[in-house]
Every structure is written in structure tokens, then in C-alpha cells.
Length: 332
Image 1 (cartoon, helix red, strand yellow):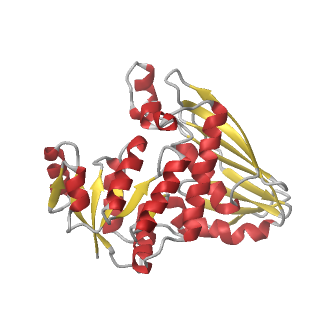
Image 2 (image 1 turned 180 degrees about the horizontal axis):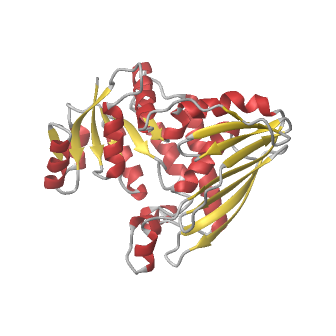
């Protein structure tokens, strides 16, 4: 059983803990919460008590040096991912870090190297790649014939956007925190594309920038020579459209590129739809926890997952450069 601690006491942290406590069918529990970090010790203790964790920290170095912790799940603001991951890895802790791994591509590369130098696992918590229905998509791409087009979209009106418009400063809309649409829900569009097709040959991107300096929405065309992938992402508008991968023989329709709730095959005449989806746990984060621990047991970072994570980071950085989204980390 891997004893882990969490950095962050928000809703995503709670969901991850619940996912580790409730593994999917036919799997045993492989992780157990043992410690909680917060900048405020009382908050750490309160969160720890809620999940019966025995240790509370308000000092990151104390957490990094603790002999009672094997691994750390990081769910802090994006701008803190790099320094917190680096500290934990350098002290021999396995790290599962929420996406995106870091503010820049260079930082992402450095984190993987730090993990290898210290013989520990560094893992991006991109849950989609470990879902049963993501494998369904991968397995059924050959059924489409030659791929010709894909439209991958994730547009969801942010519950924090009204606060931003009212003059507040939520993390999700400020460059100080390495945030914005492409770094948040746009990440899922880029990551899915890279996971299925690899790094594109060329990228052409545009975005609508907010006064704060981050992108509220945007789109990009990722060229793969024989086909192109168009991605659309937004935190200031919503959409009910599915994503679609089109081939000469048929198409795959994907409901929600982050969760892959439903996957349908449709022939190229627009007829004979066939549902391909498999049952999935209500808590999709349970699958990434299993994948993380599998790498710990193998004592090796999965090169396919590392390549996808680095490609995603590189593509997102190129999109930011083209659209003028600049973070403090870019200037360091």
C-alpha cells in the first residue's frame, strides 16, 4: 500500500482521495492517504481528520523529508506545480501532479529529469488517458480508415467568470497562476490529440484574451500532413457539441473529451450508429491512481506517457506564444 500525502485541500483533491478509496471493479486499494499539507495548519488538520489521515503539515520541506510518506499528489495552482514537484522529487518522493505539469515546457522536461536522477516516478494526473473508453477510442481508430479530419472541443462556461467580471481575481483567470483556457480545459483537447496522434507538424492558433492577460477562449489547427485536428476551447462560453474524429470509412463521436462518457461509431453515410462505450467508474480519477502505482511497482516512468505529457506541454507553449499569453515563469 502506497502511503501518500496531498498538497491542496480543494474539491479535486477530495475527488482524488475518494478515487483511491474506491478502486474500479476487480481491483484492490493501492493507495492510502497518510498526510495533508496546507499553508494553514488548522486547515490541514481539519482536512486530514475528514479522511482519517494521521499527519498534517504546513511546511513543504517537512513533508518532503517525512519518512512516513511514499508519494505526493499535487493539486495546487498551476504556477506552483514546478517548485513543489521539484522539491518532492528531489527528496525521493514519487509525485502525481495535476495537469498541466508546469508553466513551461522547459520546466516539464526538468521535472522528468529530476525524477530519473532520484529514481522516483513523476506522473501527470491526466485522467483521460487511463479511462476504459479512451482505450475504446484508440482500439477503434483503425475502423475509420484513413483519418482525414478531427474536431476536438471542450467549451464550458466557468462558474468563476462572473466573479472575474465583477472585479474579483479568481486564480483561473490570471497569468500569475499560469492559468487561462488553454491551460485548463483546453489542455484536454491538446492532450487527447497528442495521445492519439502524437506531436503535430505545424500549429496555427488564435485566442480571445481577457484584460488580465489570459485567454478566455481559443482555437487551433494542428496539422498532421494527411489530416488536421481543429481544437476549440472556452471558459467564457459553453457548448453541447460532441467531438469527432473522421476517417474515409466512418467517424467516432466522443461525448466530453475529458471523461469520454460516450463513444459512438458512425459510418461515412451518417447511418448505422453503434455505441462502443464501456462501463466506467463514476469517479474517473480511480484509474490514474492505479496507473501511477503500477509505475511505482515497475520502478520506471512509462515512456509513452512521458512522451505524451512533454508533447502536450510543448504544443500548449507554442499556442501560448502564438496567442500572446505570457506567464511570469516565461520570463525567468
